[in-house]
Structures are given as structure tokens and as C-alpha cells.
Length: 465
Image 1 (tube, rainbow, N blue to C red):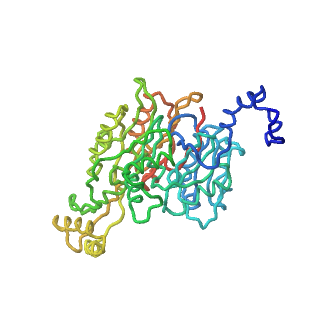
Image 2 (image 1 turned 90 degrees about the vertical axis):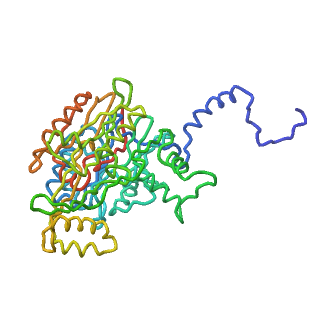
Image 3 (image 1 turned 180 degrees about the vertical axis):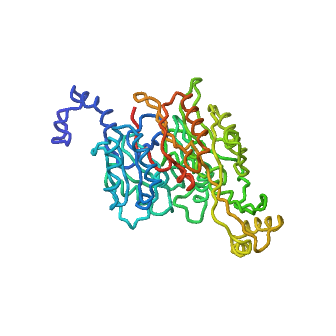
């Protein structure tokens, strides 16, 4: 083109040449390698699949003062494979007490990342709940994604503290969830229905963090938000009943000459038999028939082993969830799960009457009337029974191509709970029957009485092969 204008900005760039073709061939690489700010393709870290590569614990200072807790913590640390990497959140002054737990178990210092927080931060040891752990499938970066709100003590500060000390990023989603109410399978992930309902309430409220598009249902939009912020490719499956579970907070009764108030609903959810699904579900993985195996707790099986009766155990709810998952194509294995009370003091009936006069006292007043109908008078002593769940489902599962199949199983048949030894043995047998090496952990009764076990005190950060 003899009349072409001079000094075009493209002068010297020879597009129609072998050089141009070579450049074009790099286009796919450039697209894959380009650093795009922000989380692009969220993908939850599996609850079962792959070797446990990196794991987070939180050890608050108050728990270190009780030997029952430290012994249980150490049993997990000692059982985990040498080479595992740890992120250890703790109160700053306690590191000299905690570090030997790891080094004495053979874990090398270079695999330990300590994240210290000031002693005035109110931490709990429930490291599972204040966030979900995920990877960005676009570049492999790690995230702790927090819900819109999390009000337990100071645990909402953990993700930001971890971000300051590591390459793990903290982010937030306009959703209500807790990590313990999520379990991550192969091409699916479970979310307890209670928090999905809470998310819908948030979105339908007067000042939601995001606006629901017109002509889109709140439930549909909530599902899409979970896809955008939590897991892009896995199918979301809700776990729970269709209607609220009919259980009262308090029941009044007489047994022999004694009167009781049973705090029966402690730990129960609205649509779930327990407030977090990791307390009654365990993901096992694909079985011999090609179906995905899920272990679901059964209080009735525990009663059969122990010769007990659990009047507030909600057996029918567990059974309905098992039937629902079976109908969806999962292979369901049932296992014993214990529901039992712990004595929590006593009051005169007259004192309970006064408590029932408060603004939220209607449920307690119902139980007081039951006691009066059974013959209790103002001077009668009423014993308080606080019910909790003892669950082996709340365990650590590792299904690895290179390391094998392992389960890290809490035990409960200790001291005053020695009657639970047969259930410890039964759970070991069930997992071994599924081809797993069972690592028995220490006594987790003190945790169960606080409505949690071993799966609650950790967070999987990454999985290997």
C-alpha cells in the first residue's frame, strides 16, 4: 500500500507472519495464567476426599487450664500424620504451652504456623464454624469465606488474623451459614436447612445486604448466591425436614419420688435433629456399588446397644433424613448416636414459677404446670436434666489415593461414661467394615456436653492426593 499513512502505532508489529502465529499459540496460556483480582471460581475444600494436607485449630487460653481439653487436643495432634501442615490460632501468651504438643508428636517446626491473638479476644475452640474453607479453582488460592454475621464470642476475628499471617485470604458472603452445618462431597455439598432459612430471612428483610431481583424467588436467589460465593460447580443439597420439628424447650415429669425439668431441645435445630449436620452425618465416599456412602446417626441403635430409652431423641427425624437421602441415590449406613442428660442442679418449684413469669417464660410455665399436675408443691425440689448428643459422626475422614482410607474417631467410654465403651467398639467395627484404618482419639465427653466433638475443633484448609 504505497499511499499508506506513515508512522502508524502498529509499525514494526508484524501480525501476519510466523511471529504472529507463535503469539497466537500462547493465548490460551495467557488466559489461564492471568491474575484476576478477587475470588473467581469458589470450590469448597472436601470433607472426606484426599489426604489432610493443611488443617487449622484454635486453642483458647481458658481451655488450656483444663487437662481434659488439652488431653483431647493432643490426641488429635498425635494421630495426624507427620508432614501435615498446621495453622494454630491461640492466645499470644500460650504459645510456649502449645508448641510442644506438636513437636513432641513429631511435627516439624516448618509445618507449624502460629497465629497469636491478644488475651482479651474471646476465642472458642470451635474452629469449624466461623467460615467455610475453599479454593479458587481459577488459580488455586485459598480462602476463608465468612457469613454475613457470626456472633459467637470473638471467633469472627480468626479469618482476618489468619490472612495477616499467611497467603490464605479472608472474604465475606451475603449469606447466613456456619461451617459445621456444611459437608462437602464429590459433586454435591450439604447445607443444613436451618441456615438456608436464615439466609432467606436475611434477603427478605427490611435492609438486606443485596437486593433480590424482580421476578426471582428468594429461595432461587439464595441458591444462586451460594453458587456464586461458596461453591460454583457442586450441587447444593439441603438437609432437614419439610416442617419445623415439634419439640418443646422444657418438659416437666415425675420419676419415682423425684421431679424433673428436662431441657430437651438443647442442640436441636428447627428443621434439623441437631443444629449442625456434622453432628449426625459423616461422608464416607463412593462404595462398592458406585453409590456415595453416607453415615447417618440413629439414637435407636444406641438405645439398643445400651439398653436405654431416649424420650427426646427424635428418632423419626433421623429416619426421615436417611430415607430422603436414600431416595436421592445415596447409600445410607446407620450408626449409633447417643442422646443423654447431664444433671445441671436443682430448684424449688416456687423459684421455677418466678422464672416462668418473664417475657419468654411460656414454655417453662408449661413444664411447671406439668409438675404441679404430677403433685409438686412450691417446696418440692425439681432436678434439672440438660440433654446433649454424644456422636461419633463428628469425626475426621481422610480418603486418599496415596495415603489410604483413615478415620480419626472420638471415644467416649471413659470414667463415668464407661458404659459407652460398647458403642466405641461398634463404631470402630463399622468404619473398619468400610475399609478404613481407625485412629481412636481421646475422651471427648467434655466437648459433647458443650454440643460439639472433634470435627468442630478443626478446619480443613487443603487436601492432597
